[in-house]
Each structure stands twice: as structure tokens, then as C-alpha cells.
Amino acid sequence: MPFNKEPVHQHGTVAKSAIVLVNLGTPDAPTRPAVRRYLKQFLSDPRVVEIPRAVWNLILHLAILPFRSGQSAQKYATIWSREGSPLKVYTERQANKLQALLEQRGHHDVEVAMAMRYGSPALPDVLDELKARGVERIVVLPAYPQYSGTTTASIWDAVFDHYKKVRNIPELRLVKHYHDHEGYVDALAASVETYWETHGRGEKLVMSFHGVPKRTLLLGDPYHCECHRTARLLAARLRLAPDQYMVTFQSRFGKAEWLQPYTAPTVQQLARDGVKRIDVLCPGFTSDCLETLEEINMEVRHDFESNGGQEYHYIPCLNDNPAWIVGMAEIAEQHLIGWPTMLTPAQREAQRKDAEIAREHAVKLGA
Ligand SMILES: C=CC1=C(C)c2cc3[nH]c(cc4nc(cc5[nH]c(cc1n2)c(C)c5CCC(=O)O)C(CCC(=O)O)=C4C)c(C)c3C=C
Ligand SMILES: [Fe+2]
Ligand SMILES: [Fe+2]
Image 1 (cartoon, rainbow, N blue to C red):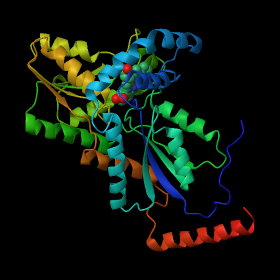
Image 2: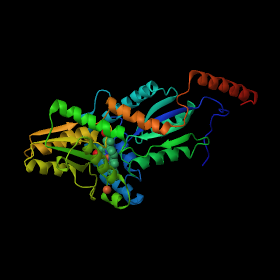
Image 3: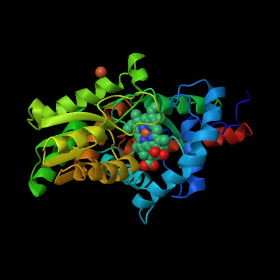
Image 4: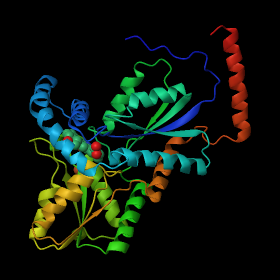
């Protein structure tokens, strides 16, 4: 494979650092063709569906895309906002606020960008733009607190695939997870406590995480354990006894067994058992999205209420809560250590001069 042509004689230019906040991605519009395009890219990822390609391609094109695209588009239409898909809107706000906070904390030489694993803005395009702007150090920060081969590793695949075509690769740091990071757990606890202060509290706190096939757990994916660790830490911060909270897994896809217990049947059973009020939190999603706003706040709410439950409270995701922006800044800072993001004005001026000399040098060489 040939390498792409790249800018020459950039040595000595101001090397900037960047944080790339990467989320899953979402369709460009709540329409059948846009959702089909998105699902096709998402579900063709071998990290997401581990079935031999020849078999899976047939199933995907004959049995899934023709039916699911329209059904999912209808669901997306119920949560779409004037600004677009909530997942993208919140991820964008997080990136902007993180940029401002890092600047406030003295990191004058770091830029924060946002990218999507599937759909737009596409991760490879964002990495290209950063390179064009002279960024030589990158922290890749997935929007997933818990590591899974199906999500986090897929972001890494996309990063590695992209740089296979690049000659001069930036220095890279990949955040694996922050399921037990204080800044993340504290932000979750603050969000729940604030909710309880204004709405009172339920008999049980249901912590619903996105599921994955059970098979991945048996094959060594740490996701399940990391979800439970987050739940234990959050319960400890909230001083909840074991009978005051539950961990469940939502969004099952396909016919295979996924991580149990499943959210919807668990909530139905709670209602049938006479529990009158539950509070539901989705700690594994840092932004509200289809899976929280439609599935949890609409479908599962209906399941609870139609089985005798009286009060169903959905506690929103961290989104752009100030406490979460602080948590993200702490996680980012721990990965920026040793990089010159806090240059003094004098140091920056020296770098600028050095870049000027390098450019003159390049002109003399005829580049
Ligand atoms: C938080 C982590 C996530 C894991 C782990 C995850 C695994 C996983 N997901 C699917 C299939 C689908 N997921 C869909 C939507 C979706 N998934 C996540 C996050 C995780 N997925 C988010 C944040 C979203 C919402 C995106 C949005 O636009 O708001 C969808 C698309 C919607 C639909 O048609 O239902 C599918 C499909 C699998 C198969 C999987 C693990 C193997
Ligand atoms: Fe998913
Ligand atoms: Fe486990």
C-alpha cells in the first residue's frame, strides 16, 4: 500500500497536542436511508459482530438492514432535536466545554476535537485535519467509561488503520477506560444526588448498562466486570445498601444470549413485585442517545407503568454537566503528562521563531 503524500520540512514547527473525544456515532438524519448507511457501517465492523463475514454479510443485507433501518429511523425521529441527534449534540458540547476548561486550567496549547467511530465527523477525517494543523501529539479519549472489545477496541482499530497510510505518525496515547476514575464516579454521584434533591428518591436505583453478547465475557472481554465495578463504586459513594440498587443490561441485539439480567424484564418484575417507584440511571453512556432517551425513558418506562409501577424516574446521562467536564479534564490531564501543553508566552514565542527559521531553511532546500 503506498503512503499518502505529506507536508515536508515541518520539523521545528509548533507541535501542538490534541484530545480527540470519540463517540460511537449516529445517523445524519432520522430517515431510512441515513439510518441504513449508519447501521451498515456499524454492523459491518468485525469487532461488533463476530460471525464469519460471508455468513454475516448475507444476514445483514437480507434480514437486518431492510427491516431495521425503517424501524430504527422511526425511533430516532422520536428523540431528534432541532440541533440534530442528541448523541452528537452532547458530544460536541462536551468537547467545547472541555476545551474551555483545559484553557482555564492553563493548557494553552491543546486543542479538543470530537469524532465519531461510525458516521460523521469520521475519525480518519478528524485525524487528517489535526495533522494538517500541525498536531503531533494526540490523546484518544473514547466516550465509553468501560472498556469493551466491541467499542473501545474498535476505535483503536480505526486509529491504527488510519495511520497505516501515514508516514509521519503523531505521538499517541489511547485512554483505555475510566470506569473507576474518581472524576467519573463523583460526577455520576453528584448527578444522582442532585436529581434526588429535587425529585425525591425511589425504592430502587436501577443502573442499566448497554449489553454485549455473553459469549464475549466468556472469551475474556472485561466489560461486564468493569460495569459492575462502576456500579459498586457509585453505590458506595451514594451509601446504598445492596438491596437498594440493581445492575442490568439493555439493548440486546439478535437472538444470542447477552449479559444478564436484561433491563426490561427486570423492571417489569419489579413492578409486578409491588415496587411503586424506581429511578433508572445509565452510567455507561456519557451522553444521552437513542438507547437512553427512547429505549429507557420511553419503552422501559411503559413496561414499568403497564405492570403496576407508579413512578418511573429516568436520571439523565452526564452530558455536559460541569462536574463531568471537570472529570474529563482530569482524565485528559493524566494522559497529557510530559507534553508541552502549558507553554509560557516566552516559550511559545521561541517555538514560533524556531518554526520561522525551519521554514526559511525549507525554502532554501527548494521544498
Ligand atoms: C456504551 C457502550 C456500547 C456498547 C458496549 C455497545 C455494544 C453493541 N451495540 C450493538 C448494536 C447497536 N447499538 C446501537 C446504538 C447504540 N449503541 C451505543 C453504545 C454501545 N453499544 C450507543 C451510544 C448507541 C446509540 C447511538 C445513537 O445514535 O443514539 C444500535 C443502533 C440503533 C438501533 O438500530 O437499535 C445498534 C444496532 C451491538 C451489536 C453491540 C455489541 C456487540
Ligand atoms: Fe449499541
Ligand atoms: Fe464480570
